[in-house]
Image (cartoon, rainbow, N blue to C red; front, side):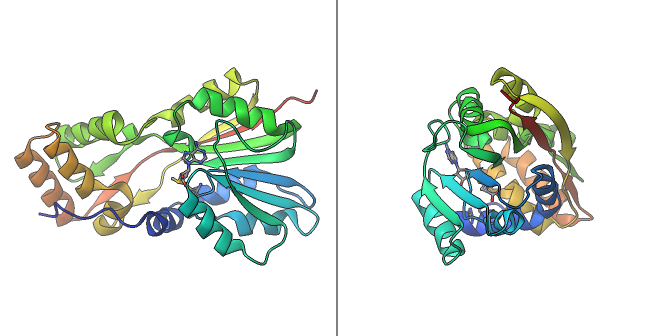
Length: 256
Ligand SMILES: C[S@@+](CC[C@H](N)C(=O)[O-])C[C@H]1O[C@@H](n2cnc3c(N)ncnc32)[C@H](O)[C@@H]1O
């Protein structure tokens, strides 16, 4: 029984997710088609994990700007990129970005839209700040797609229902990316799905919050305690598998 596992520190948590998601992150970086001299905006940059790779791709004639609403993230990202003049980090909200219209060549948003109050307004902002002909790459999960083995299918489904209804604001926004992009005036160049697979329960538990959210679901009355305990015991007994989809959309702002 593994109830009661505390939520990790956010910065540690994002580092663990970045490690587990390195394949899809590589895919996002490639889709951005970064070249020397370009200006890139990373909206919801978190602790700045991917800012150095983007800076390397745009070279000394380019620039990278990270924006995040959380002061602790901006501080950590600032520490990470200190001493690299072409990277800057600012506090800012994706609903009202601190940037002029058509001022960047590329926009990246990695698992940020799942948290925002108004995804359509955020897409309108991404479109506003991007120059005509520029590219945006947005990666978002679909928390309803989590599948695990072994364990009761009905408990897996109840867990997903709880996470989607209670824990993550826009839990299934991944599947809506092309619709949101079209609504904001983007052209949809590509939509693909990356599916990180976990074979280790402990690692998956840290990233996917299996124990934490089962406990919350039980306490909130969404899941029977015995069913939750049996499910976690089965998952921890191994062999174990979990997989969950991350949608990756590549969008262009049509040239004027
Ligand atoms: C799951 S983390 C991802 C961080 C980073 N993109 C990465 O790949 O490691 C989501 C980030 O989006 C930020 N965020 C949430 N809402 C935001 C908003 N309205 N504007 C800007 N950033 C936001 C959070 O503070 C958090 O740092």
